[in-house]
Length: 287
Image 1 (tube, rainbow, N blue to C red):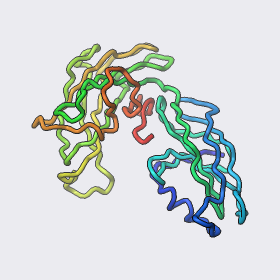
Image 2: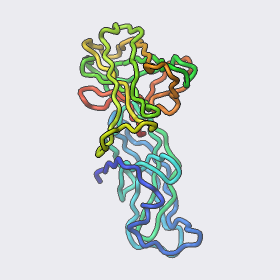
Image 3: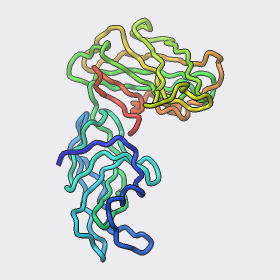
């Protein structure tokens, strides 16, 4: 069965039973046994094929319709992002981000019943054409600067034209203050090859006057490159970046999606996104 993508965050407990007339059960006990946690059959840059052991009716009364399965990314208590549905026990998920870690669970649904979500399986999708390594230089996440180093590596089979690459470091602007001074302190390929653009996200249908002072605004620092080519396996070398407000006021980085606590080590940060020719090749801030 073809997989079905859904990007909305779904309230698990509320929506699971809207279309079903479930028999009354003491203490709202799930009518279906919990399916097994998903097992990875194939792992490719933009897709995963998963399988799991099936659910079954836990006792009387039982429903009379087919059991279907929801493949989910848990986001919090009773909240998840739906990745796909099927009546089989195998599903290929498409349109995933390469080189990105996903926590995936499965829940069963049927007319007259539901199951608890399975235990999660953590899987990192295969690398795409490029990856981003990250090293946090700032041991204090609440001082007046954001300081980190990025390194882009060509993990594809052919040359990578850097002018087709777009990297986004995702953050949140506190207090509705979207001003930020972006600096390139040093880059192995030369800071003159690096362009930085500050962007904040404007939700559809937003009234004039956005952002509202005092609110938190999502956005990103976008890196593009004027030129350059990476051979397979080659990297840009370190690109050292630093950002601060015009007023040099303190910035709390701890709620920034791309922030990782300083460790002194390089890490492949899947919360930094990288696109090549407009196609996501690394990272997913909603995973």
